[in-house]
Each structure stands twice: as structure tokens, then as C-alpha cells.
Length: 126
Image (cartoon, rainbow, N blue to C red; front, side, top):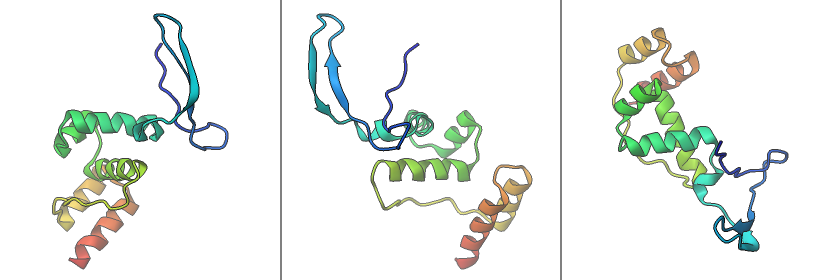
């Protein structure tokens, strides 16, 4: 079974570094301190989301269907990936939702009460 590289220490949560690279063909080893990519520091769950996001070219509806998650969950994962990659500003237009849309999502269990409350506050400000 192929395992993913760990980006953070399971004990203290500090960033990990690769210290040895080995060639499987000739068994040559190179020692040093090698940093991982920004993606390696994301959790496995966020790495999976990022791959699905790219595969679907950012199409939120397709991501919702493939992952069986709601729009707010897609948005939450996307925000976490963006922040995890070191970007502070999230700049994208969210689709307009009506109060009725939000209440329907809450009724269907697509969002929880806190998410619904936050979304209703935002549309109340507009």
C-alpha cells in the first residue's frame, strides 16, 4: 500500500522536512534538508478536495455531486485549502442565495444551524 507523506509532525504539529532521498534503481542516497511543497502540508482530506476541485475545473455543482456535499461545505474546504497554501485573501464571487434557498438547505441537512445563521446574516446585510 502506497502511503502519503506526512507534512506535519503527529506529536507537535510542526512542519516536517525530508532528510534523505533514495533512488530505487541504483540505491543512491542524498542527505540534506528538503522542504515539501505547500500541498504536502495540507491534510489528506484537503489534498483530496484540491484534486477533485482541479479535476472538475472548479465547477462547484460537479464537486457537490462527486463528494456528496453541500455548497457551504465546498466553500469551507476551498477556504481551508486557500489558507493552507498561505494565501490570506479569498477573492471569489459566491452565488446569490435567497432566504428560501438557505432554509431549504437547512431542512435537507445540507448545512447546520450555525452555517444557516451565518448565511442569513450575510444576505440580511446586502
